[in-house]
Picture 1: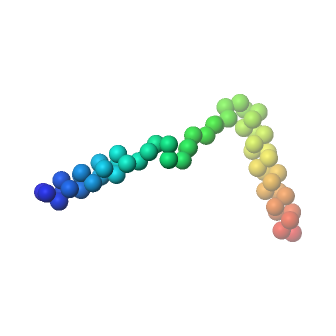
Picture 2: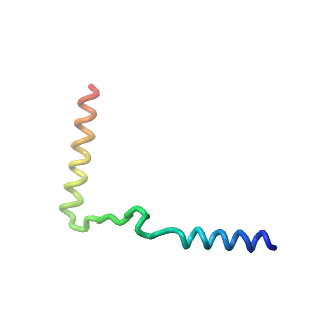
Picture 3: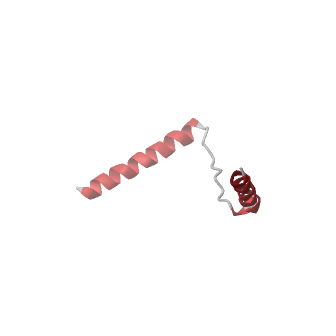
Length: 56
């Protein structure tokens, strides 16, 4: 039981030691405008085509 208690204390110490500012920013914008979405798809497709042509 004491070991479990120790683990709980250690976990909370680790949790408290994490600074939110040190964590990577995982936010990203999701385009909701249909034109933006299709443009990014087309650019991605065009890039894949270029890579394919380079391989030939």
